[in-house]
Image 1 (cartoon, helix red, strand yellow):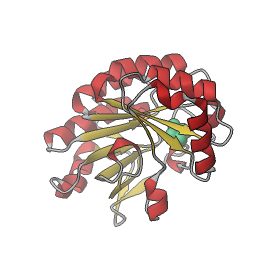
Image 2 (cartoon, helix red, strand yellow; image 1 turned 30 degrees about the horizontal axis):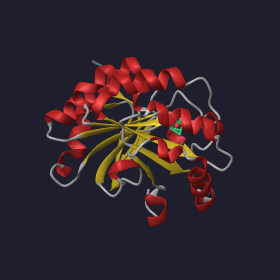
Image 3 (cartoon, helix red, strand yellow; image 1 turned 90 degrees about the vertical axis):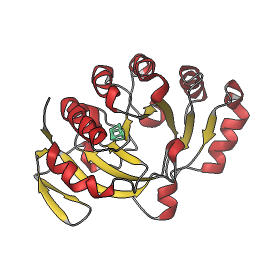
Image 4 (cartoon, helix red, strand yellow; image 1 turned 135 degrees about the vertical axis):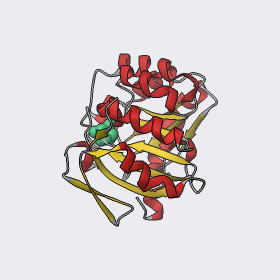
Length: 232
Ligand code: SF4
């Protein structure tokens, strides 16, 4: 097990996406990502920093050891819904993510993994120490990344009942792609999330008109609420 890795930030906030919208979480933001989505607004996905801040006050050096992270977050036990491993893409540093998730579980936290749904091998290793998997399905027409359908399908199957899915749609998204994504999500809670800055009423109208919402009952349409609250 790799006991150290590169982080970008540790902070506490309100989850603004997905089916746990509104839940208070500790966010552990991992550095690096294996994708380059057109709408990515996370500098952490591209850079490795020498140091980072925990809760905006404690400066820590990278690579940081798991025991130091636990020391920083343990005061939050019993005060948050869960700890979100986010990024970047946490599974890019797979062995480190597994060590951290295991240590968090041993410390009494629920672990919530936010992932782009492409690194199935790494998922299988972290899954025993994970309570919730918030997985993205990337529509090529919005994310501008291609060739992920097979990876998403395998990942979703491996994640099983722990997974819910988030699909970001932007202006100009493709209805056939959204339909294809929803077919992958049969019997899985799914959130269609309008891209920040997009024409939300226009997107909803296009989605309603397309009939894709009739294909399953467990679909929600939810924008990123943290953007409206002015928090990160
Ligand atoms: S998967 Fe997430 S972190 Fe990675 S490039 Fe896409 S939006 Fe950014």
